[in-house]
Image 1 (cartoon, one colour):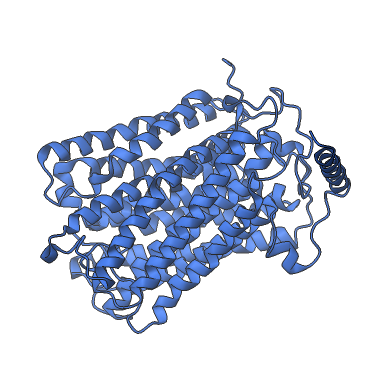
Image 2 (cartoon, one colour):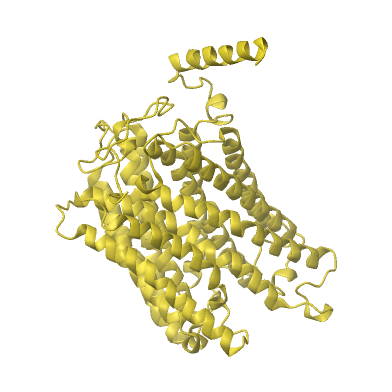
Length: 549
């Protein structure tokens, strides 16, 4: 080794030590702190604030949909605008609210949970966030263009999607940018988890939230390019005269459905797996018991991820597949219920004979388990190919996926927010208002979505601005539930703002009595750089130690 390189190494070491001496030094200016930040906590906060904003924009669109459907007849908006609202609502909620929220959680929590100082690729981390505001500004700008926003549903099926005007190019570009952001976030998560765990943090000692995110990240990397390919083919069909999906030119519109759902089905698991992780952290804390069947939970998550790739065509039972195809996809779909059932039974077993208390995070976690299961059971009904001919394209499908996404993914996000908010801010939120938020949300979400099962069974089609008078009563009930649910999220906003700026009650390092895991050995709020020296790991500090290893 040359003298020069030795000198450089010494210099680098000195520099690192200098840096460590005042490591809790946050950047001073607003721009330095937030625009150029490479700190995982700040980037996590940016993701979470962005997703909250998107929740409210997507929620406002849902309110337009439910206001139009309050009574039969065309009431408030033009049918074309209604279709734009259903499409934009879905795109914003999926790509703008739920997914960035989970990436925000990953950024905040994964380094603290595995004993790492930061994420593995901090600059890329900054970039992967700052793409998003531009992508969504572009997507939302289509509403103000002459040809209007996308109006073919979030699935963007041709030929309908190809009938949109010039704004379609902006939608496709926005989707590309969201995909790039997701892939970069995933690479970062995988690199961090596999390379930066503290000594002694074996894979089977990791918190389940870290496990679920590791598996989710692989899913994201696998499917986002598929979506990119599908929308690019749509783009060339629209603007460059190709015929991938145009039957007149020898293409096949059903091929698009296959490509889309090969992305789309793993995508719904991308939104729910981190939710499983969060609930698996919360239930043991408030049951004051270790998680039942930790290893089984890890294997179940991996099984769900694998199976999610071989079930895509259950969205397409009505396109005229061969019988053998329908049977394969029907049985494969039913198979997914097994590892999901394992998870539900393990959560219930964890609560069994535990010393349970019902703080807000626990209430949301239990609400999640009960209502997610209802959504899962209606999914099993949809998986029966012969019966799906009746359910397909009705409100029954809407009821199913909203039961797994709202009381599933969104409730888990809320549970996680209440659970870690004391850790993030150093203050306790108002428990009373948290409980009011839980009960108003839970009651209203059921008034909103449960009647839609009946509407679907009676034959009301999805994505429709008007309907026959026999559906009027249930639609009115559903809309009232929708307005109540929308209003109750203002309580959520109020609780968060109060906790950050006004709360007098300081949170201790271990904010919850039963909490285990490395993040709880840090102070609340944690220092700007969490673990500059790796923590000592023993069975008392880790949440789940697989005792067999």
